[in-house]
Image (cartoon, rainbow, N blue to C red; front, side, top):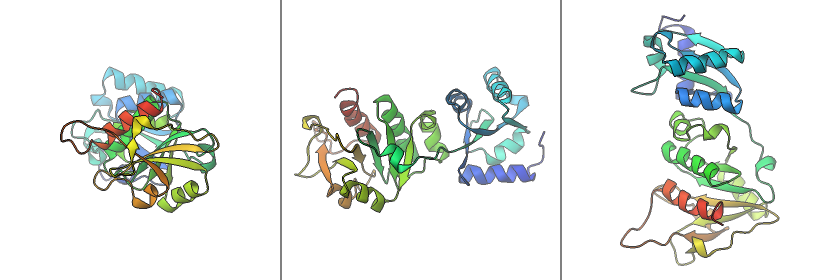
Length: 258
């Protein structure tokens, strides 16, 4: 039982809560713990406060222990030292982020959501959840929020444990598009764009990528140049939608509705 806030392990957890290290990620919440266990994620440790554990937390911790996962018990004061939640369930997990190879994800016939510089981790997490719900094969992150961000992981509701997430630099995505390995369709507001529901999404010899841009600037111009541009028709005086809402509309059409 760790009771000192100066314990070296508490300092380690504080660093992981701020930023992942060597593929190790810290996330909070019993729902995420249960999802990680159900998905067979490589858990390194579970951090818990026995005195405040609910029956649900106790059951999840016990299941983790049965799988040989290290259980680190501590005082609530120690847990609060690294917790990023105002109202915490006082349980957290440390796991190793899945490594995804470009060749495994960007393959002929694969349908991918491409997140270009999506800054808000809540939006990014919701978009990955939408990607799974609409039958996408994975997500590509080009800058923006990290799949290791705590808010992103919580917003994904555990989907991040099941959906392959590949991080690329923008030049890498452009090279994949220019070489014909991925065919891009990108949301845009300009005269060249076509209504998203009037487009035939095909890419038999390449991966299919549906690209959504940052909340403020949209998809980068250099990506638009290599993409078929699409837009969501809207009534009234509405000019744009929240990027996660837009992703839900388009990806449903491309995935389940297509």
